[in-house]
Length: 313
Image (tube, rainbow, N blue to C red; front, side, top):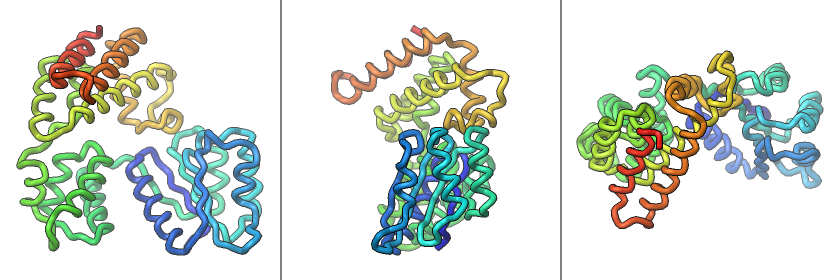
């Protein structure tokens, strides 16, 4: 196993999959694994985790969100990279972009095993992703089944990852085919919570309500819809504070968003003010509590929230 890995890119689902595979291998080798979130690191944390073991045990350090590492902790990484310990495996996870680029370039000079995690835009790339997911789960799927699953959930790799795991667990042994995918989706391409969120934030209430009904009819949990709208509002809030002159791919690492997500939020922001975003956040928080049991009619609560947000208060 390599002693240095760099998981690089803004697509969280790809990064999570890569980290899961590396972590499984480390556990097989009985490594002692330490995980640090860069933003939470204080002086000494990284140095302690990378210090030689008193008992000669195999160890590993995973540093997540490297782009958020405080300046006073970067020296600890640089000192280690000057003389890396081959008995320690270090996994750096960086979302891409210009934030933390100097440290990133220093890591790249050591030629780590680089795992690219950029967003997948082509259907063929998404289909290859799904094919590999099933292979990871020791299942085979027909080309038609893979195409059908991507058609249903291709806008969200996390949903694809989750769906592949559920289908592999629920489907009978043997090759997964289109019939199994159709059964999983009740024979229809599912309208997701993000379709509802997009129409709502665009101010298209009729389309939002139609998407809501379609999503609910195909089995989408109301909680997932409130979660999707809340996520989209958070994206608006993040992007609203960013310099519009800076290109989306340059902001991706800083904001923890894919460039296409930033571009979409910028388009939606043309009709939003900070006060309206704050009001919408309050509306969806109330709806979330209501669909989780605080209301006798959660569907009405959702429709009321969509109406308020689409009309911006």
